[in-house]
Image (tube, rainbow, N blue to C red; front, side):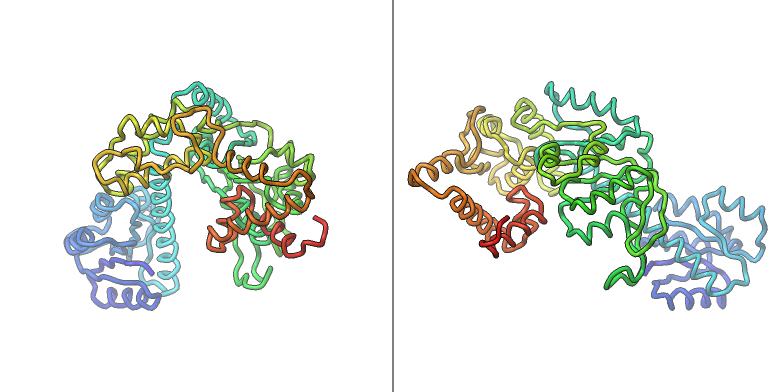
Amino acid sequence: MARILVAEDELNMRRILGSILRSEDHEVVEVGTVGEARAAFRASPFDLVLTDHRMPDGEGLSLLASCREVDATVPIVLLTAYATVELAVDAMKQGAFDFIAKPFMPDTVRAVVARACEHTRLLRENERLRGQVKRLVGSGELVGDSAAMQALRELIARVAPTNATVLISGETGTGKELVARAIHSRSQRAQRPFVAVNCAGLSESLLESELFGHERGAFTGADRGRQGVFEAAHTGTLFLDEAGEMSLALQAKLLRVLMNGEVVRVGSTVPRMVDVRIVAATNRDLAERVRGGLVREDLFYRLNVLPIAVPPLRSRREDIPQLVRHFLALAATDLKVPRREIVPSAMRKLEGYDFPGNVRELRNLIERATILARGTHIEPHDLPLHAGDAEGDPGSAGPGRDALQALVDSLPQQVDLRETVQRLEEAVIRRALDGAGGVQAEAARRLGISRSHLGYKLKAIARPDEPE
């Protein structure tokens, strides 16, 4: 449903248009002059303006500039009884979305309005997503001046202008998608779509439909055809996050697309050509997964054309103060609260922490401290780090090492290694599930594995006598 302004001086025509639009569940505001239209548009937002070409106090096209000053995304459709090629060309030059000749058929009005409303929706969605990306990445630049970050920026600058496939590797939370967006924004495809999909977050059947699309009736519930992300990213960049987590069957289909640029929707035999640059990411050692038979070797080489490794935060601790200031500013803006400052002792605490969750963990920590800090400054006690991490010790081995060693020391000298490992794994998985409230996707994230891998483990736990 859209909110539509109808500017038409002829009362009967105005009522007919209003009736047609309301039958499509649109909200309609009717006015009879250019002046009334300007006042209505300034008073409240609209998704579309339908205006007569000639009205008592001016031409409908004069509304264009007035409306664009208020909202540049709103399309203007011209109604005219004097439809000529010259008028159509002039209207389009001045920025009109379309024009409808009088007398008109109701279906013509419905079709033009539907296209115009979809145009508005896409423009506003694009603006919303741009705003989200801007908030997520701040200035759009990778934050940090360490040698590692300078080398990363230089590599991105060299890789971005090409159309070659890129494989980004790095631990969870290091900012692999940010690197992918930086590559896209510096490429020749920067003005085209950037589409991201998490290959580990969907089941095999859902991921196949998400990647390649499906036709109507392809499976239960497919009441209409739908394009996949390959088609959505046509002429742009497709970011495949955790690309190594998909099944071998899906890997084969992905390989076919990479080789010949053809996508076949689920339930169809008709290939569709796509022009997409692939940027893939993984937090795993894909070469090791190839050796383990979990990733196709030919797919690995197709993805690993231009490898980029994103450094973990613990290897560039000198960037932490700059990142903290950056996230403090973002938190104040996003949360609409006064900006906090951080005391030196709290900063030292952060600099001495290993950050197993990397930059993402640091940002979450700063946001939480911004909300919960009682004073104007963030103190050390406002930064609850994981138990077991040494404060102020850059060489800290990371959380849980002492506890793990204590567990090993408590075992008898003679143990059944297979049974012990299985029982420990089951206990860790059950704890993760309990902590995630039974949500497998969240439990998998906490365990650092894919959802499908967790599902496999749970099946093995349910059938302990069957060999893995």
